Amino acid sequence: MTFAADFRAVDLFLEREIAAGHIPGAVLHIAHKGGVLLHKAYGNRTVHPQVSPMNVDTVFDLASLTKVVAALPAALKLLEQGKIALSDTVDAFLPDFRQGQGEPIRILHLLTHTSGLAADLTDKKAVLKLSREELLARVIGSQPLRPPGEKVVYSDLGMILLYCIIETVTGEPFDAFVKREIFEPLDMNDTGFCPSFEPERYAATEYSEELGGYKLGIVHDEKAERLGGVSGHAGLFSTAADLANFVSVFRQGGVYRGRKLFSEATVALSTRNFTPYDREYRGLGWLLKNPADISSGGDLLSSRSFGHTGFTGTSLWLDPEVDLQIILLTNRVHFGRTDHILRLRPRLHNLIRSMF
Image 1: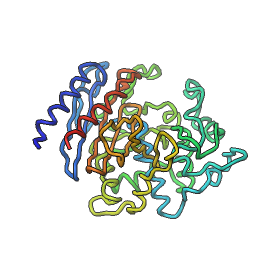
Image 2: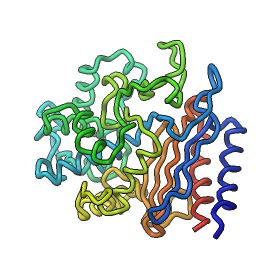
Image 3: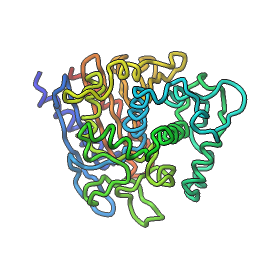
Image 4: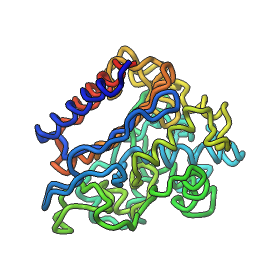
């Protein structure tokens, strides 16, 4: 197979999406059987107020990829250290969390989005006026809408609770823990919360009336911003190269460059289907491919594939069946909160998967 010819089709696909105004630009990373086949920048990292080209080392606001790149590995690390178990209840760590009668919400429910908690706080505009303490009080005071373990409802609130639990267990700030335990061992030197790179490193996100300009290195998510830029549901910034290091751990059973970060059993546990009863298949943190359901991973990735997306336009998918990893980073919210990314992702994944 001549990959150079095939990737011209990928280039053309993304160039057309950029020309159509669906995204300002992108960085795409494709790896197969441990080898990098494509690592390329397309379009622009900013269009407003001026046009600035995208670079392969552009730093992106990962949005909800934070859930699997920071919160998930932190929880897995604590699980391996014997400091938490999936069966542990939320109120064992957060005594102010009182859900009343019935089955208690457990760490397993938070990681699989089956806690029964709402997806978000009801009044999103009010979030902008809350202090960090007020926002956390609202989340911790949230009551489930249904019994845990019955239905998948993708919930930021659950991942904020997990972030609080991780800080309680470790006795240190969440960002410090994941930097030392996850990012530094994986050589993820451009990954972190509240980054301080030069402005030209960032892919700009949405226009902020409060700032009077576009966000560069300031978290896009409102709740994460009120939490000081650090949370378990959003807030992380990174590059495609750093994310490639991260996904390689899940490709190689917990090992990175000969060093074991997790056991093979832990990695396998994270991609087990805990919600076969629901249309949306969920592992620990990961979204799993349900062949009978619509997926951002497209139609051609295998039933063993898993991944995640972020609201700003980021995504990563791994298909163990063909040993394929696809990382797509865009800043689609630079053009506002349109839905073009919802069609872009599956079509791009179909195009790439058809090459193997």
